[in-house]
Structures are given as structure tokens and as C-alpha cells.
Image (tube, rainbow, N blue to C red; front, top):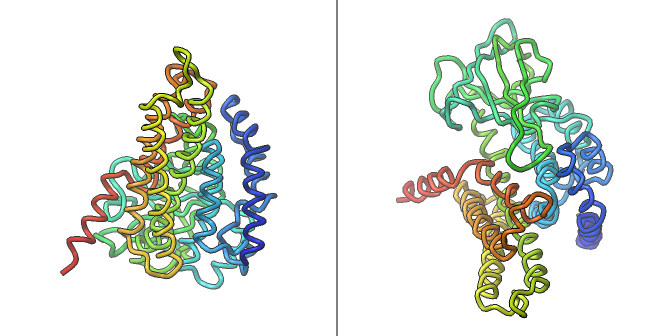
Length: 377
């Protein structure tokens, strides 16, 4: 997208975020529901196909442009942010290794909002990556699946699940596969999980596979490429994106904290005139800007084809830990009232905890970074 059209789109997003979407955020939190009408509104505004190529019907933003808009969306309710983030990223891993027919069958309908898909990697009894245990075997032109996945965002409503499993009797990356599993597949049971601490209204699912049969033409890429699809197609750019969602939410917490410090008067003086509050605000603003620039640095590496796993993990690690520091300070500035339901800063504090687990914990990011460092001669 050229610069003039992009700036117009950016202004439209700002108007939406600071206008009708604020009331929508409040409604979601009050009702506990983020229904299909929210996704439909975002779809109608074109916000669910921002980063997809124009050949699929997307807007064709480059990754840096997308990150700038994602920061704005992340200043809203966590469930809105999740819809925008997942919808604008789930096409990537499928596109990464899909055949021409699969791009027609899956990628284009996903971008245009005719299909929805969920990303299913994490399992209840293992970690992720090469530790996955959900098994597959080929039988009469089908893959037969056994195992379980959980904490699958939108897994209770998606049309397809992008599933990562391994062929029986394989180990490591060898034998891993990526499959587009229809939600109505025989042998697949979907159970909605309990409500989460934050992200009110975002459904998560526990998936059970018992001799679940999936046609062979649902295989994305080849046997042995499953983790490559997961990491290079989705997790690395998604980690940068999650980092930028941390920046957006932290920026909202800072904006509210500045406003609160000016309005709240104690002992005849607004909080904004107290040195300790000024120190906190300065630390918060510096932390946010450092995280923003690190995410944009990783985004440029993605655009230029030079992204490494460490780039993505550094962005996610720093931004995540920054968000925890900023939201802690924001609550201190607000005081005890920030602990009460109905306060936006209370909801932000809860929503911020979700990013601690999305696309891997801090400990996983540190392991990725250390692995790359130690691999150097």
C-alpha cells in the first residue's frame, strides 16, 4: 500500500479506536461476551485482512505498517486485540508451505473472512515444538490422529484447526506435520475451556482426537515440515506482533496514568507534581519507547527477509516484561481504586497477563536467544 493510502487508513483506525471501539470494549467487559457481531464489524471495516497480500484480497500492508496499526488496536479490549492479531496472522503459516490449490481452498477464504481457523500447537501434558505428542498415521489416504491440544484461542468457533502433530514412531522435527483439520471431523471432540482471568469473551478450546480422520490433501507442506510451518510461518512474526500488542496496551496504561496524575489531588497537590510519580511516568515512557523500537527493528528484519528466531524472541521478551513493569506502576499511580471492577486500568492489568503465555513464556524466549548465541562459532 502506498504511503498516502496507508496514512488515511491509519487515521481511520485511530478514529475507530478512540471512538466507537471504546464503547464496544466497555460492553464486552460488562456482558462477558465478544460475539460473532464483533468479528463481523471488524471484518466489514477491513481490519481482519490488513497484512495479507492483495492477490488474496488483502490490503497488502507491509509488516512494519501492520505493526503500527496493531499497536493502536492493542489499546482496546483484549478480545478485540486477539481477533485482529489472530485473523491477520493465521493465513501466514498456511501460505508458507501451501500448494496452489490449498492457497485457493484455504488462504484466500481465510483472508476474505469466509473461513476461520485456529492455531493448535500447545498440549496439556507436554511443552511445544519437538515435544509434541499428538500422533498421526496414514491409512487409506487419510491421516488418523490421536492426542489432545488445549488453550486454543477461538478453537471453539473456528471452521478449521491448523494442527501440529507427529507421525507415529518419529522424533525431533523429523515426522512433524501441519494439518488443516475441519472442526466437524469424525473423532474430534471440542470442549470449551473455563473463562480466563483477562481477555473476557475470547473463547479457548480443549481439543480431543480419538482416531480422528483427516483427508491427506489437508497436509500443509510435507511430512517433516510441521515445525517449520509453525515457527517460520507463524510463531516468529507472531512473536513480534505480540510484542507490539504489549507496546499498545502499555501505551494506553501510560496515557491513563498521565491523565490520572493530573486529576488526582492529595494534600492540596496533584499527583503529577510529586517527584516519585514523575519518575514513574518517565520510566514508563522510556520503557515503552525502547520496546516499540525493538519490535520495529525485528519488523524490519522480517520485511527484509533477515529475521532470525532471536530477533523475534528478543522483541517479545523485552516488550512482555516491559508491559508488566508499566502496568504495575500504572496501578500504583491510580491507587486502590484500580483494584475495583469497572476501572479500565483494572481490566488492562488482567489483559496484560495473557501476553506472558502467548507464543511462549519469557523462559522460552530466553532459551531461543541463548541457543542462537551459543550456536555461533
